[in-house]
Amino acid sequence: MSTLRLTTWNVQNLFRPDAGDSAARAVYRQKLAALAQVIHELAPDVLALQEVGGDDALSDLQAAVGADRYDHRAIGRADARGIACALLSRVRFAVKPADVDAFPPHVLALGLREFDGQPMTRMGRGALHVRVTRAGTTVDLIVAHLKSKLLTFPGGVFSTNDEGLRSRVAAQALARRAAEAACIRATVNQLRNDARPVAVLGDLNDGITAATTEILYGPSGSRVETRGFHLDDAGDAQRLWNLSALIPPERRYSRVHAGHGEMLDHIVVSEELLPREVVEAGNAGAAAAPAGGGENGPRVKRRLPVSVDARVEGLRSIGDDPSREQHEVLPDHAPVSAVFGL
Image: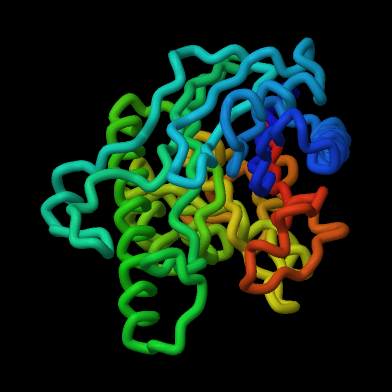
């Protein structure tokens, strides 16, 4: 059976240091080597990346993992910090990579504004869309990195005793993250018109059941852990399913903050990557659903991915001060991977 292996990973501030900063360059070389080792172990066909500091850093990582192995790369529009979504792939891109950037009309109509009063018109950092074909299956991929829950205060002040200011900044950050999720969802809607499989990968900066993450899912119901997951439903063509629910509970996190695991990095897919299959009545199990013919007729269930997991070994707990993370070798996020049978 052919497979498609997808991984998403926030590699945390992957910037090429200045040529004259020998200490920073030594740490950078260590980081590239550490990233390459994990990538070789996971061996994704397509690797979605967040927090890549420009094409020069992406090129360095491509060289570290082997440009002969991952000979296709793409990078999106960076944010004000210079970090961007990116891709390394062993599979040729079927279309030119494109930014998913501008808010659609229904999001613009909300009249959201930045903290300085300017209209909010596009994602803080562009998401990235590519299309790949593997073993005759063509899949649209969107790599995203939504607005962080880390608050950015006017004038660059990281913390404040002004609770009114803090609450306004937090509300604005939440509004931006929701608008960015709606922008991704609008792109998914357009892609679904062609009935190709779609997968959204990235750091969504919220959990599985957060309101912002749920914007991506489409019609409610039929989640992975419910019996409705296996049932045919009119909303299935527009739904996306979050595969994080398939990760064992004790590993269902991708970052550790103040000692608590958070599932922030997700792979969310359309129904073509979770196809229904007829199973024998004796082997259907309680989760399988009748497919016509009543209780004694043929039964169906969705085929799950070969594997879904977060590589959480070695994750450190982080705090609220990002400056303490500047010289760390390993990222503060775990890579999340899914392997699909095709």
